Length: 433
Image 1: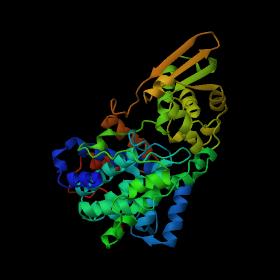
Image 2: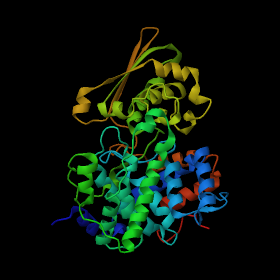
Image 3: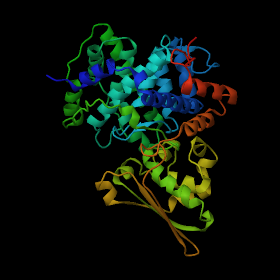
Image 4: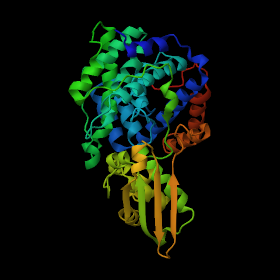
C-alpha cells in the first residue's frame, strides 16, 4: 500500500538542500525569527520562573541565557523554547496548515542538536517542517480545540528522528508513535486569558522528542495512526496527505505584528488610516473580515495579554492608538490605557461573506469622524504573506527589536549575521554548557 508520508520522507532523504538555496534561505529566516521571538518571550516572569523551577528539579546541559544558572534537560528545554517563542504571539505560521509547523519542530530539535552543524540542523528542521505542515492541512482540528498541542508534535518527531540519523522508514514510525498519543488541546484558555495555552507547543515538542527516542530504541507503531486519530479523536476522516515534492516551508509566513495572523489584516488597515485621521476625532469604527477570524479572534475587552493577542478589536485599536502592535503594547501601562480601551469598545465587527466563501484573508476598516468625514481602507494581503514576503532587512530589524533588553546591539547583530549568512559547517547555536 502506498504510504504518502514515507514517500515524502524518501524524497527529502535523497534531496540535497544545497541545490535549493531558497529553501535554505527560508529555513535560516525561520530560525532567526523564532529565536528572536524566544528571546523576547524569555523576559516574561512566568517563563523565567519555569526555567528556574525546571533547572532545580531536573538540571541538564542546555542554557538559554548565559546567566541562567543551572541548565535544563532536553525535554524541559523544549518546553522553555516553545513557551517563550509563542508568549507574545509573534512567531511564524503556515496558512495551509492553519497553524505553525516550525515552532514545535525547532523547540524539539534545538536541545538535541549540540553535535550538529548548522547545515545539519537546518536540514532536520526542514524535514520536520515539511511533515508538520502537511499534517496540519490533513488533520483539521475541531471547533473548541487549539492547534498548538495537536499535529505540531508530528513534525517535531520527524525533525528529531532525522537529526538522530534514522532512516525514512524509522522517521515515519516516529511520526506514527506520536500520532498514537496526540493530545486534544482546548481553545478555552484563550477565552479565559489563562496562559496554560503557552505550554501546548512545548508539550508537542516533548512528545516529538520521546517518539523519536522510542523508535531509535526499537519501539514500533501502526503505519496509519494519524488517519485513525482523525477518525477517533476528531470524529472525521483526515483530508488527503499532500505527497507532492514541493517544499511547504516556502509557504511559511513571518509576522510583522505580535498578534494572531487573523488580527494583522485589520491592524494594517488601521495603520494606513492612522496617517490621515485625527484619532481623538474618531466617532465610530467598523471592521469587516472573513468568518474564521471572528471564530478565533472574537475576544472583546481583553483583560489579559493572551486574550488581546487573539482579539481583532484590540489589535485594531492598539494600532490606531500607538501606531504599533508588538510586545510593548501588552505591557503596563500601555495595555490598560484609557484611550486604547475606549477605541476598542466602539469597534463593530461584521463578516464579509464573499471573503469567507472564497477562503480569502482580508479586512476592511471604516472610520467615521466627528466632523462627518468617512475614511475606509481595505487590506487584501499583509507583509509576510506569500505574495508579500517580509524582506531579510525587515526580519533582521524585528530580531534586533525583540532582542532589546536581553542582548547587546553588538551581540544581536553578530548572532543575526551568523544565522542568516554564516557557513553551514559552523555552530551558531550557543546553548550548551
